[in-house]
Image (cartoon, rainbow, N blue to C red; front, top):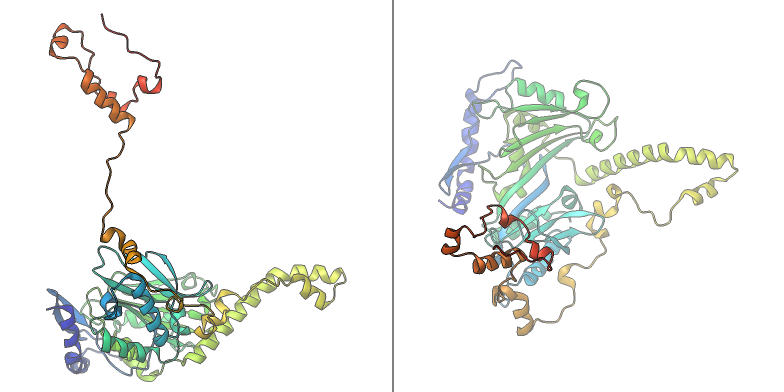
Length: 456
């Protein structure tokens, strides 16, 4: 069964999977906390390309999470119009135009290859990074990779999830989502890494018969330095990996209670359905038994404007904290020298300085990007001669000329001509064979005036 067929079966099995999970919860043993520790948290399994793969379980509300990072692949023919040949330039321009309609921004510039692809194109501008689109390469089988950073998804136009889902459904039904990070923010610390650790110990993160591995990261687990705690569930090499960490402290606010629950899904032994774009909360809730109860209460993710404002507030506090530490001595000095407040500002302010990267307006709204995208460049149509030059080696492989012999090769060729014959060897007049001689530069090359003394 091909992976595309398996993906089509995902929708048919969705109702069956939810029913199986409900029945599993009915007979799951109770933990020592009075909640359910599931040993039979059923997932739908199908055969794809001769391998048994899983379709992630959907539970709860689709609005309980948002997408933080996204990677997917499609084939090149999706972006080739019937009147085009399909050169890389045409494909890149078509992708840029489609992305502008879906996300609100297109391709900015060409870069080196990424992730095994020969060429990549950056999304964003020189100061903000929204991700990249990569294509080309002998082992990529004509695929194109789309990677969106968290910054790129925050800055995208509202409703990009439904627009992208509709585009994939209509034009690229066989697109493969290779990675998708789902997140839910607890701005007031309603769920913490310590609670996640307790739930893991109680078996509430056990969705199969074996408890997943876990790890406590951060110095605050041993000392109270307000640097932040992180609790990992699962292995980074697996298809599911959960992070529960103090997001506010990660961004520099030591007093912040902001905690983020994040699920990283990769298509190693699972099929990530396209529905994750429009129902991310269901896939986050269905990942572990503990999330069913947690996101039944917190079934709405923090709205994007509130999340953006929180990121900006934390960024402002972080910048002001370190600006005060660095600039205060200079201000004290200027005050003692008799400078007024306006003179101090004029003295310390660099007119060429820009906002910190984390607070750039374009980091939160793509409307602030003021660049021309690749498909907006004015170019003349490509004639046949220029097309042949572009295709170059693919249509007309260049003629390969033999390389000039090196000095060592010339020397070995010379020895073949002057080697003594069998009669000279019998008389003992032949020059003895030096097994290491072929690694040395001969004297007659280093010193042209050198002549080997004839043997008498």
